[in-house]
Length: 163
Image (tube, rainbow, N blue to C red; front, top):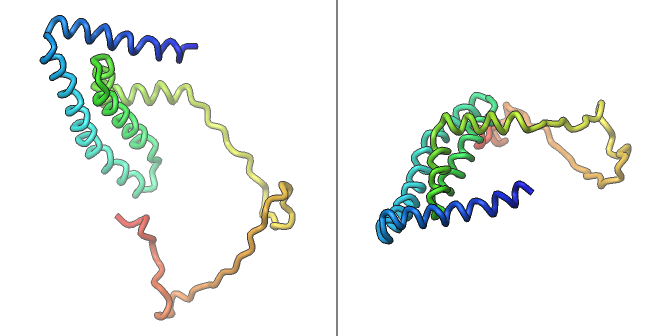
């Protein structure tokens, strides 16, 4: 029910703000502000992403939990989208999400409301024939590579782990 109220309230707020700002500034300055906020949204997405992406790479390279940079990146994107969408209320929300202190507060607020549940783990190795769910069995072969043999491809970190 609260989601329906939100979908109803936000457009009404945007329309009311357009009427107020348009009456105060007149038509062309109001439209100019809407276009400038869209350009600012795209610029801020790029500028903030340039700050978040290196942090994300550093954390993933150090095998740290990338949740915080990912959450900040997602909120930056959402803020930029809100700035690109025409409207003064959405612009205010988008600008607020561009502030790191606001993003941190939103992440903590959402984090207190999220419950993480673990998946049940099976104990010990199971043979494919012993599967209880009756799912398909995939048969495969493997070859052990000799690291000293020069005719074999080089082993080492994959392209996904290089900096």
